[in-house]
Image (cartoon, rainbow, N blue to C red; front, side, top):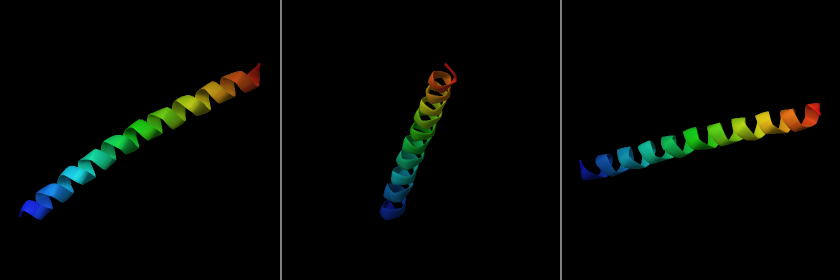
Length: 38
């Protein structure tokens, strides 16, 4: 039971990181395209 709880905690943390990475990537791509259009 303890092991499962630990794994769930890890998964949640990874999903948070994933969301942050996606937002960062999107922001980078957007700023890139803004710079490219100039």
